[in-house]
Amino acid sequence: MLEIRYSEKKKMIIKKYNRVLFITNIFKYIPWQATAAMGYILVFSLLPAFQTLATAAFVDSADLVFKGEQAYESVFLPLFCIAASLVYQNMMPMVNNLISVSAQNQLRIVLKTQVVCKQTRLKYQYLENEDTCDLIGRVCQEIDRKFWEAYVNLLNGVRLGINIVSMIVIVMAHTWLGGVLIIAVSIPLLYLAELMGGSNYQMEKDVESLKRRYHYFGQILTEREYAYERKLFGYSSLIKDKYKKLFNQSYQVETKILRKSYTHMKSGSIITILIGMVIMAILLPSLERGNMSAGIYIGLVGAVFGLVQSMSWQMSSVVLGLARLKEYLKDYQAFMDMEEEDEACTEPWIDENFLFQSMEFRNVTFRYPGMGDDVLNNCSFQLNSEKTYAFVGANGAGKTTITKLIMGLYDTYEGEILINGRDIRTYGYAERKGMIAVAFQDFARYALPVDQNIHLGNMGEYDEGQVQKALDKVGLWDAVENMKEGIHTNLGKLEEESTDLSGGQWQRLEVARLLYARRAINILDEPTASLDPMAETRIYELFRSVSLGRFVIYITHRLGAARIADEILVLKDGRIAEKGSHDQLAALENGIYHAMYESQRKWYE
Image (cartoon, rainbow, N blue to C red; front, side, top):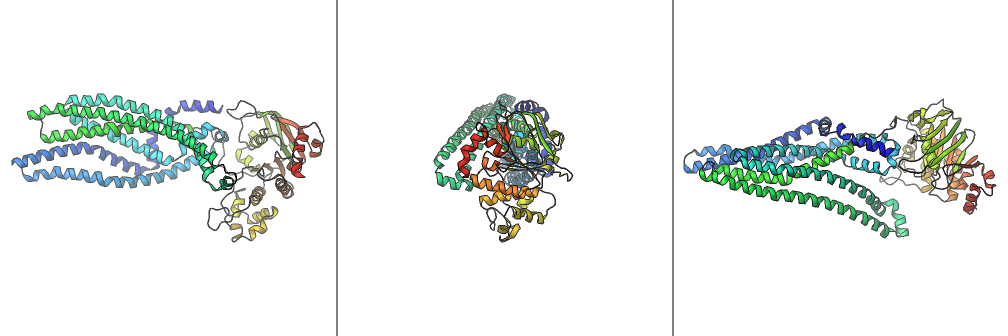
C-alpha cells in the first residue's frame, strides 16, 4: 500500500510544485537576499554586450585620435565604461558571496525547521521503509545549500539567456548567417544537456543510497561507541572491506556522471569554437570592404568567443542544473506529500480521570508495508488492569509489533484493538500518548543534565520533587546526590564537566523516566536485552517493586524476566499459542513455553 500511494503521488508532483512556486517560496523565505542576487545577475548578464560595444567604441575612437580626426578626450567615456565593467566584475562577486552566506543561513533556519517538523509529523511507516528513507535523506540533507544553489542556477540561466540573446542580436546585426548558426547549434546542445541532467539525477539517487550505507560502516570504524568491540574482536578489516566496496561503487557512479558531463560540455565547446571561426571568416569581407570598423570587428570576435564559452560550459552546466532541480523538486514534493500523523507534534494529553480497565485485541491481522507475510495473524487476547502481563516468543514472533500497534504507530491492521472497550483509533494521538509510556530495547542516552533526562518522560510542568522521588525509587539518588552539580549534572561526554554512567545506571535512569511519565499503561519492550539474564531479571524486579498500582506489560524473549508477570502470553506464528502463569506453562511438558524455559534454565541457576 505504501509503495502504491507513494507512486501515485509522484505522478502528480510536477503539477503541484514547479519552478515558479519554487521561486515564489525563495522570495518568501529570503526576500532581500533573493532580490539583491537577482539585481546582481541581471547587471552581470548585460556586461558582455556592454563590454563589446565599449571596446568597439574605444578602438574606433583611439584609431580616429591617432589619425587626428577626433579629439583625445573622445576615448575617455568608452575607457571609463570598460574600467567600470571590470571593477564590477572583480568587486561585486565578493559582495555576492556575502549575500550567498546570509541567504543560506536564513534558508537553513527556515527550511531545516520545516523539514524537521515534517519528519516529526510523518507516519511511522515511512521511517521503516527503505525507499522513503532514501527519499527523506536526498531531500533533507543540506537542503539550504540545494535551494540556494538551485535559485542561483536559475538566475544564471536568466543571465546567460540575456547574455546570449544580446550577443546574438549584435552578431546578427553584422552577419545574420552567424546568428542563425549559433541558434541552430545551441538548441540541440541545450536539449541534450537537459536530458543528461535528468539522467544524472537518477544516478545520483543510487549514489545517495550507497553513501548512506558506507557512512554507516564508516561510523562503525570511527565512532566511540564501537571502539571497545573493534579492539576486542578485531573486526575492522571486515568492516573496512564492506566500506571500501560500497565507496568504490559510489565513486564509479560519480565518475560516470562527471565523465558524461565533461564529454558533453567538451563536444559542445569544440562545435561552438568551429562556429566562432566560421563567423570570423564571414566577417572578414565586411572589414576589408570598410563596411565594418576594426573596433566592431575586434569587439565581435571577443564577443563570439565569449559566447562560445557561455554556450559550451556555462549554459550546459546551467541546463544540467535546471534538469536536476526539476527532479529534486519532484522528490521534495513527494516528501512534503507524505502522510502525517494528526497531533504528532502535540504534547501528550493526560486525562487525570482516565482509569485503565482493559485492553483487547480482536482478530488482529497485520503485515508491514511491502512485506508479503503477516506478522500477526488473527491474533486475539484480553488484558485486565488487575494483572501484569508478559509477552514472550522467538525473535520475529510479533512481540514488538504488538507494542507498535498499541502506540498507534501503525493503523493499517485488520480487526479491532480496544482500550476500555473503545476502539483505539477513536482516541486522539495526543490522548494515546498521554496514556501509554514505553521503554524500548534501544533506549536513548541523552547528553543532558540528570533532571532533564527524567523530565523528558513528561514535558508538562517540571516537578523537582517527583524527579528526586523517581531517582530514589530506582536506587540512583545516592549516586546523583554525590555528583558535583547533583541532579543538574550533565551526563554523557558532550560537555567538559559531564559525568558518564554505567550501562546499568543508564537503564535505571530509563526506568526513572518511565516512572516520572506517570502513564496508566506501561510497556517494557526488552529495554534490558543488552544485559546478562540475571541483571535483566533484577531490572524487571526493580520496576515491579516501584510500579505498584500501575498496569505493566513486559515484552521479552528471556523467560526468567517473564516469571515476575501474573500472566504470560506465548506468541507463535503471529497469534497467542499459550497463556497462563509461569508455573502453569512450565508444567506443560510438550508446551512451547516449557521447551523455551528448559533451554534457558541454566541462565538463572
